[in-house]
Image (cartoon, rainbow, N blue to C red; front, top):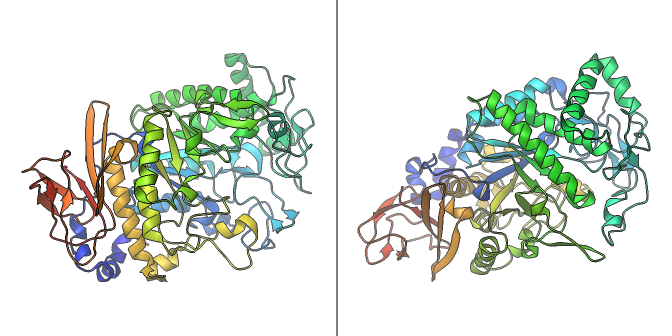
Length: 558
């Protein structure tokens, strides 16, 4: 559904504050993109939008899974369609993070949670091609090119730790490639790395120094598909160029960086990082960076600027307060930012969000401007495998948006955060409850959600998102409170020969405009604009008053 259709419903909901919505700036104001301020939209491709119903069940997969544990039809074409519709751009999204599109195990597992298929992308069978349930390699190329044409970067989800589970259709990889035990005890580095995360999830021997031949299952598969000779030739070229031994880690590095070289993905989100040797990620970053520069040289009209390749890490349990030292136990501490990563996913945001605005924002700014200077965190309030999201029933959607989108650091919107998609589904077990299909129907009908309505909620997220996209100071700048009531703060940023200054006021009264302090940021006589209402006003006496009431003011001089 294209967003203009929602205008009438949102006007009714917002009243006078929304009357000026057509004047709200929708394009970035010429400030540079920086990853430290990125707004990353994270989606499970299978659960987002079905653009091609002909590929809904590939490889003989069936409708026999437990609730929310089978494929549901979302695909790469569906994501591309939403990019073209302007859904992401209107939301202020500057990067899309896709779950792994690689070919998954064909069969299903029978677990305590019921029969499960690999709809989520983390159970790979073949790292060199697209899963047919999601589309084709051309579909993936089209998605990346369409995203780039709309100013949006693409983050590819990398799994270096494990294969998919073993099923009747999916045999185990050779023992010199993977271990099938023991199960991880998580006491120290060895019992976190040299082990399997769970039962029946074979662990790649990424620390092995023994050279290995291609797994027979891939040889047989590639010969049947008529691409064995090509794949072998590419591997020979890679190993000759790099001088790397033919051990499991380097096959995996080659296969994963091919997605950069062939399609121009702009960054990696690395899965299960602490369960793999830290130096593996540094080598992956080196090869991915080479591949990215090669792709940019070959595609000068499709590249998005000159930023280097980007990587963010999923170190489960990492919190921003850990800074650059993550404790593995047993006396081992790891600085992952010294091992190829530019950013760390911040697992503490969902609980830190219970704090008041100032405590949250000031502590995050102190960390990012201090011990982590030059790097960032990727904050989230809900995710695909975090069973303790902030506000799972979506009863506080405005607070969720304000805290996530305005916190220092980059922001991860999990699909449906912006549309108040419910994260508790009756009958769904475990993480399946977090992974329902995107609630497009509720957005189209402007369904009620507590005291709000879904389309209103999305528009609130979008206004914050567009402000972030235009102003790197929001996520990358230095934070300072200006007033306690109404709560007002400033962010200032300098970089790439540009300076950026913004003022934000939160929890404003909805029935009348109030004066907002901008002293020390904007001077008397200057005209500033509120990105929330689109209104302009002149600074007087160190304050500004807009003539339209709104719950938030997003102030800049554009």
